[in-house]
Length: 240
Image 1 (cartoon, rainbow, N blue to C red):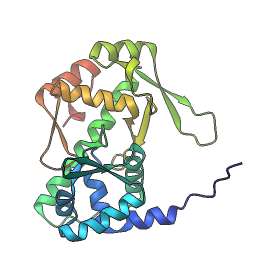
Image 2 (image 1 turned 60 degrees about the vertical axis):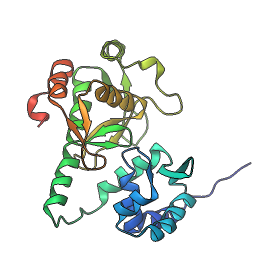
Image 3 (image 1 turned 135 degrees about the vertical axis):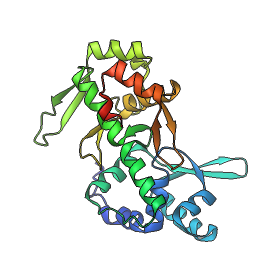
């Protein structure tokens, strides 16, 4: 019988705990892949220094590397890494804001950002709340002592999302369809999992969302503002 010991939290925490490596992970938390040079710039270290940091992150299985000819691109190994970063942010102290650029970036991240491949921030929380108010999703007890809900896609919700252009029958089978993250800024749930990714992708396809100048930041377009209000009934004051 294969008996597993307790998880070595200290080892992975030590890898994440280096400020430069933490910046690398956060730069990739929007789900994209970046070359070492770009990650060096994000971490504020030299190209020669970043190689050692990337090696440790790969060894800890926090990153994977993809080869494209002679080029190497790095991305988070799994969606669970992104979820872990989001959860760590819940208990972490905020970084000091020492410049106008840092202040602008921080406010943009709070408004709307990608958490790997799904929408987070105030906008992500507003969408999650609207899905529940319209009974597209319903929260059911987990059936254990944790007290955390289990979100279920309702039959009317299935029909409504299908009409919106999200094929709920073809969500990725390798991951849970309906999951959530506790948003580190809002302290409320935003939609994750296969459904969260599909819904976010549909919003990009409709040009309701566009990528911002900062990594992970997304902006709601005027078409998106009107579309979210008309389709999901999200009040304008939640879309500011």
